[in-house]
Length: 338
Image 1 (cartoon, helix red, strand yellow):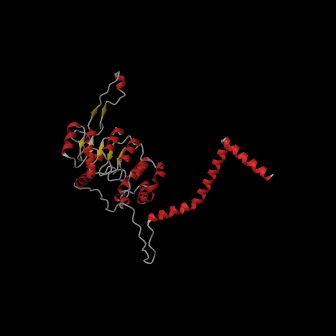
Image 2 (cartoon, rainbow, N blue to C red):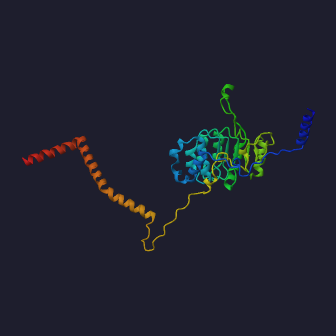
Image 3 (cartoon, one colour):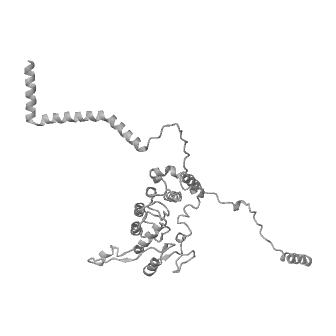
């Protein structure tokens, strides 16, 4: 018995110094491979690669897509430089919360229309948009009361728009008069971008920055990547200039989808030097107009003769003197024959 105990003690002492290290998985382990893309992402990738072929008719079938699919198509169109007012309005959905139209051809009309449709927007990126002015920013602030993140600047026109929009961000107190406090409760006393918390404007000028810091202390300009900003608020990823606003929407889509910015040009067929010169497009329109006029001239003349006879008949039926003259002519013609 004592001998068995001594053997166990020796075994325990010998195993005390043994270090057991976990087995490392090989580099080519199946668990280290990239996660396969979702079927929806693969379908969006195929659709995005051929987006220029269907972009003109997108309004006809966009109503069948759910909101997140519309937003993904919008992000692909923006990266392929196919985004304009028509495409944006066709895809707009009332449930959207973010809108990234940076670097697109969207104008004030498109942005104002979407602001009326999507009232729940809380993050908007209009940077590098050369066709957007302060008027559209005013519409956004008016119709999107939940707006917390605004991105702007990036090009001379957008920088000018941002400077002109600074006064729109300042809080306003409207002077109102009513008979009682109950009636004042239903009227908006305040104004301005009351919910805005983060302004991403990389090249903000000193004057605008001073105005915002003095009159809009709740707004943090160009927040840095950290867990909390200077006021203790958590900085969302959508407020970081280094991260595209719509990055999370297309994170699972293959980047090759928007590798080509525009549709590839079709190869031109070499012209035959002995062939007759091509007719200019203006001349083709003129010849088509002349041919159409020549084809419709007989029908037009026949229609004019019918209208003239109809007018003469109505005149004879309505005018007594003309009717008597016509009847007298018929009677004299009958008597002459008899």
